[in-house]
Image (cartoon, rainbow, N blue to C red):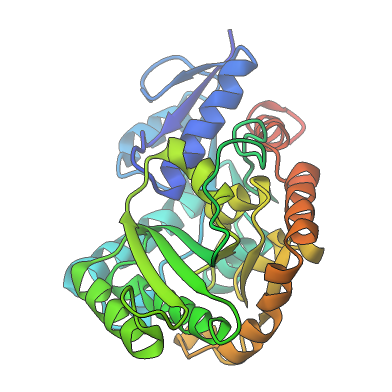
Length: 349
């Protein structure tokens, strides 16, 4: 039986854990075994970003087993905004380890988007190992427009779905509330935030919402709710229960949350930074020029986004159908898994 080793064994609700679960699901459905033990017998090793166990990685290579590194974006926010000693050290250490594995250990490199590939090659040079781009995929049977939902009829719900919007990663959250506030001049708006948000940021957002639109108490068309970390199984219902998803990450590498939203028929709005425009095409959502320098975390053109996002609210059927079509055409889990297996196992790759 063919066996793939995956390292590290990532758990939680973030993008790496989400990918691991989906990829394993695809492997097992094809009769391919999975292990996390780098000392076991297997046919290929997939490194999800990086690992600190470099001696084991070296032993795998000496055994003649192909090592494939899947790369996300580079940690960069700490270079623009002070995010605390712990975050900064972890981010820079992470960059060092990822680049070291890419340079010294990887036999093949998979980038999750064209944006990520260009980013890595601009910052760290072109990898010696053969490289390819494989966009993330989603189970189109689980993430679907069909199924239970609680989409409100008396207001429009804007969903933010991120692993973490805490501290140094929170700028997009403030932008989302400002966009919703501008929309609330014409449409009653509710912002629902699913993901980790630190207490200080929650208080600032609540204060901002109170000033802009009355917060949760007022009647002037804007409210904000924090759900915290949402179990993975509840995400399809949450997506179906919303009218828009706002991509809050600045320079998103290849956000799983966007792909999952599209599969559920949820239009995505945001600014043209990162890989967002690679994912959201045609009427699957509304992507507008950033209007400033995202790499400096400058304030985007929220007036432009609010002016165009209203169309997605007014033409829900059209945009929801287009979002699902986009997922079915390019973002299915089977397509992603087949592409990964070609890189992992095909001698011609």
